[in-house]
Picture 1 (cartoon, one colour):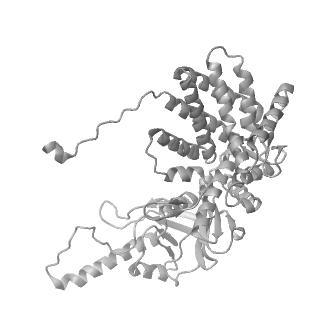
Picture 2 (cartoon, helix red, strand yellow):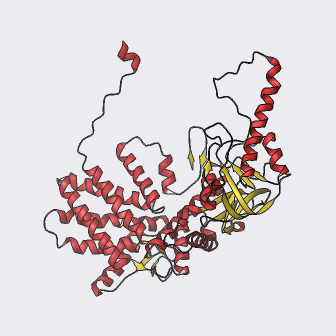
Picture 3 (tube, helix red, strand yellow):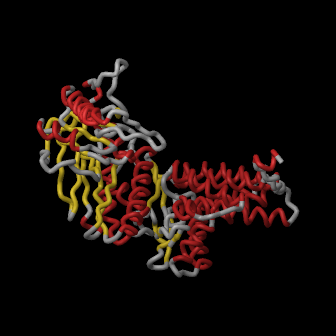
Length: 495
């Protein structure tokens, strides 16, 4: 539970969210926070893993420095170990999923959710996540998971969430009940300005010397709104969506022409609507001569726009946009804290499935990759002469922090279970066989992670090792900390 200065509460076990909200002053700590953000941005999952690995590399590196091993030697050994680990992972640990088998994608999503708030409903939501990713992917090799819009609706329980394939759900409704609830063959205008009488900015005053002109000014303001709306309607629009407000003067011509007007749409949803429908986000409709004009090419298209009830609330769904495939997940939950955490969980799962679809490779989870790489590096280090060998051995030891913490969190004897895990991988490597041995946290034994469906994107592990290694090297290069003199205030300079 995270509580900020204003008393805002965040309940999460997402590593990136926790680190982002921590008030850390130490420069090395800030590097680790940036590392977590980089992993979250590049992969979307594995943020806790990359920070734990980097921290363990730093701790073991400090031990070597205390033993009079030079930092450059440690850095050289770490870099060599990191490269060999990534090469071995790609060649021996990763399994190709060229055909994008559905069960593999579902298992990747389930593994991502296994430690999160949706764990009890992982099968239900994993199916939903895979369907959403495949819906936005279409026939492309890329999977733009950001096109999957997640709309949070308070009420009911998690299993009553739903997927809208081919539709974009937005948390906004009609501006007036007199407007139609649905329209087909839609031409959509997307606006980033309000259809309301102009209000002066703060600090600007309007002085009227002749009171008799007040009604004329007010009428002109209303007429200006009407002209803008009519220009949009004349261009062929039958749906108008704006991020700002719509006042009564603009509502009248919309209602008269059977137009749906939707207001107060968030900036993120405005951009999503524009991408899905092919519309251009317009910030003003005044041409060079000061006349109101709206080009029909700015309009987007969709098969259907409708307002539907979701529990006690309603939302708008734009179906089958002409430009891009889209999908929406309507997430139900008992409170805002649960909805926010479930939203983060689904985003992680979407990112994981996206990476597998694009890279076509998965690895076994449950500490299998880290144990395999640790065993391999310990053997590879014996072929390296000099003190770099010691650094490579420390790198191999650092990798074991992941299975150790997994075991500790499950109340298992980490020493015993990790020893069994390493033994299984050592024997397989001696025999030249592939090994997917992983920790079964429920039954306290070693199992085949691949056969049991404990899968992760191979890219997540590769990036974790690369990013953690570079972060550790960056900090190990530092041999002193100099605190800069604070800048003098302008008043002090004048004195």
